Image 1: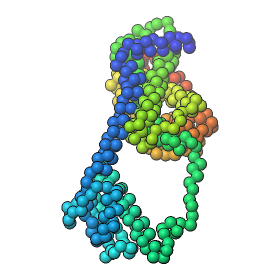
Image 2: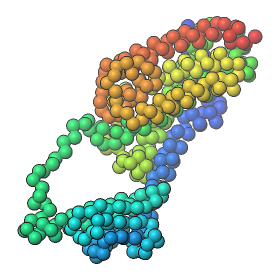
Image 3: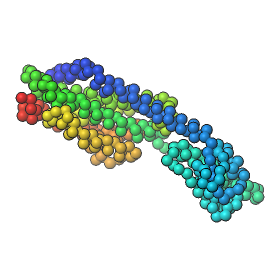
Image 4: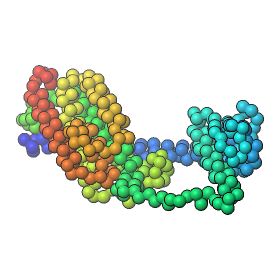
Amino acid sequence: MFNDALLILKKELKNLTKDRRTLFSTFFLPLIILPIIFIGMGVVFQSIEDKAKETTYKIEIVGNKDTAYREVLTKHLFWQEVGENEGDFKIIFGNNYTPGTRATVILSYDSSSRKNQIAAEMIKQSLVSYELELADKFLSLFNLSYEDLHTLKIIIDDTAQQAAQSGGAILAMLMPYFMVIFLFSGSMNAGLDTTSGEKERGSLAVLLVNQVSRTSIAWGKILYVSVVSLFSAIATFMGLLIAMTLPLGSVAFGSQGLNGGIGIGPLIVIIVSLISSALVSAGLITVIGCLAKSVKEGGSYVMPLYMVVVVVGVTTMYMDPSKNIFLFLIPIVNTIFVLKETFMGMHNILHLMVMLLSNLTIAYFEAKGVSALFNSERILQTV
């Protein structure tokens, strides 16, 4: 039976290689489009930041005539002082302010502009610098400096794994989401085409009258969908790694790129996790494709599931790796958390084994269901 299933797999893969558009969109497009997306984002972010630093802003300063602050502000950004309600920014010193007295300072600006957000941060820094300068002047009256007030030397000892400190946190947030999304979408396209698509084309009926057992056909198609799904996810993984390696791509990630790389052990865990998830998604999509009369109908069944996967990916994006063992029994969720742990260097064999056991068990029963459907003329509606 296994040899026959491999024969069906070989036949499906051969058909796939003939469809250049599907081949390109499934395997090569993620390698190209993801670096382009993040490089484009990096170029835009860098351009906005550079433009923000070069722009001369109109600023209204209320309640403070001190020239010292204006000199400090000039060190942080280009600006010109304007009259009432004529500025891009308004800095209001309250409580009848005189330099050195306690006061509340209000910074008023329109945050809908990214350039204004960057400028606002520079203005905040100017206020901090001004406050330190005033504190030093006041303390100098007592032969002290601001540094003399610091009695503690604070040293940050980051006990996180090195992988989590060097871009791993960014990877752990983005990688699982993109990989699971592309893994499921790869299953959708291939699974519906090889089941309900073949029904519409009439090629499934021809396949079923061959001497190959229908159970072997079912297993072969599941393996085919799994392979397409897996390579789609791997292509996404490679595309994101390329994006993070490039300087402008790393800007979009808020990181300076990857320090080191991904070792053989973590890479094996990633591949094994994706294989188990590919089997689950492939089995589920193949079941739906068998039940649907057409690709359009199958798509309407699959789309709600796809939205669930997207929601799960988004909601878990900012979550830390969980210690709740029951979460590793839930398909998709377990893969995301295992991938998070892997990218952050928090390897947990128990979580990996529970995920594999859960995914392979579910995939087995899905395959049994597909096999039963392929042996049912009525449900497959091939006659």
